[in-house]
Length: 355
Image (cartoon, rainbow, N blue to C red; front, side, top):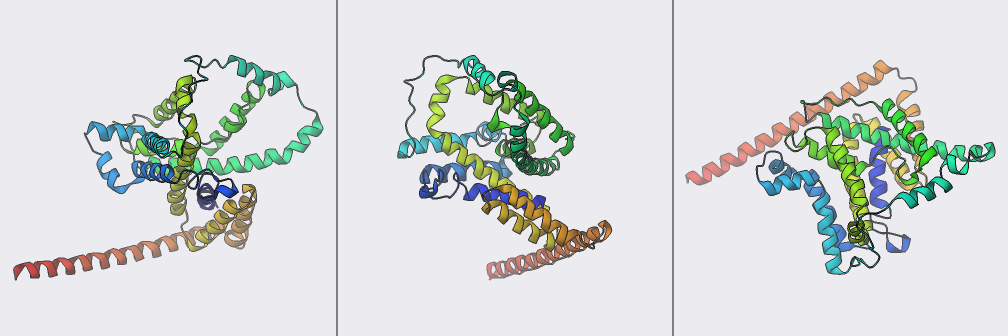
């Protein structure tokens, strides 16, 4: 089911408004910015995931390559924005409304305090809380998918570095996210940022962390630097005016990078044919259903009926071990065939050269 959640979130990103959805259906991705979107997404995936670039970035002493490695997918966003403005797919920046360098957040925070926070509006009556309960449960189910994704990304990342121990605890993530949202509910609710995970940022930081200690000393420092830089940049008014025309394009690139990371992690999590089947149906339901929680419900039901009924933990573990053994043996046979073909090819080349 966890694999299905990740794969489904990837499919949803690709099929959503910032992916390949048509303009007639409200698409803001490929069909709105065909040239800039294609170049930006390709470059972003290349910088983060390419095998060829990975060979270079993990040990290169070249300053330009090291800078690209440290910058994550930001260069791809810049290139896509420039291409979009040149091709006319994105509007040029409008600085006419810029009256100061630094943004003053106090008036906006005061308005939020009076109109959104519990201390400003007051505690709502019980009937409103009761009506909101289904929405709260739905939000938690979606947040559960975020936590599953973040946990999988970090487990995949920690394999690449032995110099730092990453303590991954979904329970602690739940508590931290809950405390944060509770504090925000009293003072300054941020409804659009109340999830536990920003997938594209997590993938970007994780991919840079994998390149070694010289590029990112600690994953905690990388995450803090990313977020600190983000909110400082948000306070610089001319910078916000500069990037405002390309924000939908940047969002599209972010989601496609998230989709790529979700695919490669999710597919590795399914270990047996039964798990792959459950993951596929769960992913399809999450991607197609208007409410992702329906897809999660489908995954839970499938897990119970297909994997758990009349099967104890030892039997399920034995099935996993058997499937992994079959997979490893098939890979060994495939590698032996490849080596045999390579040896035959080399022998033919040697014989031809000797003539």
